[in-house]
Length: 115
Length: 116
Image (cartoon, rainbow over all chains, first blue to last red; front, side, top):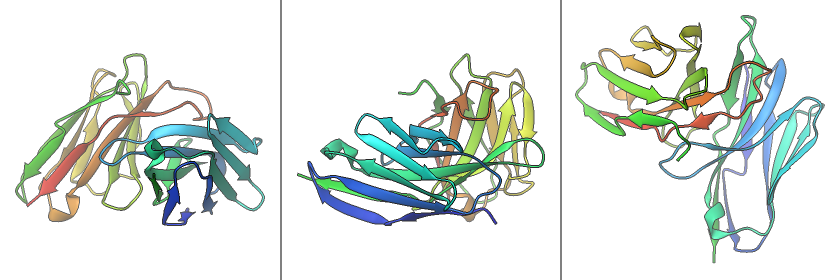
C-alpha cells in the first residue's frame, strides 16, 4: 500500500530560526514529490515539485531535498517568519496501471512560529 | 486567492440528504481534481477530469459519490444519502493538463460539509 509518513507531527520554533521537516514514502512507481503549505481553513498552496532526477529544489526560504534511493524528502525553512505557521504536507504521486498520476498525501506537519 | 472557486463554502445537512458542491477552475486549466480532507489528515484523492472526461474514479469513496464536468469547465461533486462520516472539507484543484503531472495544482478554498 502506498504510504507517506511525515515527521514531526508538530513543531514549535521561534521566529528567525531554521527548521527541517521530514517525509518518508513507500509510493511506487514514483512519479513526483510535492510539498504544500496549508493555512488553517484554506486550500494547500504548492511550494516545490521534484521528479526522480532532481535532488533539491528551492523556492525562496523553502528548500526541498529528495533521496529517491532511500525514499526520503525534507523541507528546510530558513529564517522562519510568523506567517510560516501552517501545516506542511508532503505528496507523492505514482503512475497507476491506468496511466493516471495518483497522489498520496501525508498527514502534514503542523508548524507554529512564535515571536 | 488562487483563481479556483468553490461553492458553497459551508454546507450543513441532515443525514440521508443529498448534497452537491461546485468547483470553478482557472479558465485555461483542463485538469480538475477533487479531494476530501478530514480533520487532522492530509487530503485524500477522489477523482479527476481532463476536460469533460473523468479519467480516474476508482478512488471515489463509495457509489454514493459522483462527479461531473459536463462542458469541461466547472465541475460538481454529489454525495447521495449523506452519512455523518462524510463530514469533511472537500477540496477542488485545477492545473494545465498534459506532461508528467508536474505542473502546479491550484487549490480552491474548499467546501466544509457537516452532516448532522
